[in-house]
Length: 289
Image 1 (spheres, rainbow, N blue to C red):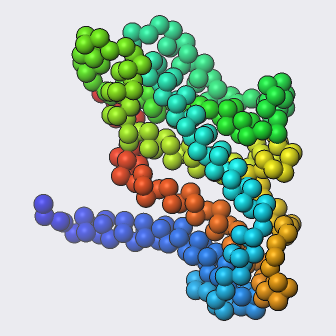
Image 2: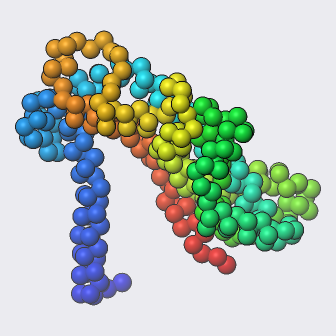
Image 3: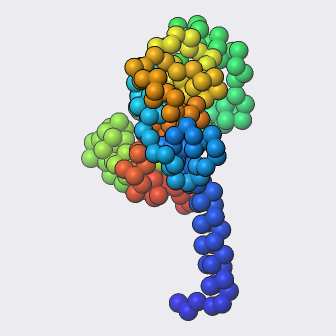
């Protein structure tokens, strides 16, 4: 294919625009990392931009010796892992029957799901429901109420609609039940969709904050994001064995940046393992035969 002048200009424009957008997203993270690795003097003087000045790991040593950080990290991992599993299980088991034309009342159920997408329950009824179910001050309050996202359900259903019905009919002729069809045929073909939904759900669980503030009072069950906010806005650090000499070399801003890095890096590490399926799944539900 011969590239015309218009195509070349368009490609250059796209390259410059996307490069600028990419830098606008990456540079703040680089600045945060640089501040977390810089000493007190450099940060207070405003000398830190995108490279550490007065390199030190003191901020990370301080926060990693804070037991409340590890408690929040443990809770966030539990919420993210088990919450994402619950999300994928519930979304898949509801989206599959809603995608099959032979199931009765699927249109009525879809209307009910669509209603929840447009209108959400206020805070007080949600709180009263969580209280009546006995889930206050438990991690279940951060996982079960958000078990199904209506938007993700419609996306998953659209993906299932594109699966060839002849394949499913052949499995039924061979004697497969619906659960076996779902487990052995539908789910293996749905890896891109599952990876995309999994990342979306996992990021939502990892960043869970508002629900934790409303439903959890006990300190041993707060997630990492709640602990992060306490440090960022109130400078509250737990007990640690760091010497006073090291504390004098650290800046509160550097400690806050280190906490942000510690809270961000784990969820970023998940993406490379699912990148292949995630890229394929970005177009899930966009084309319907």
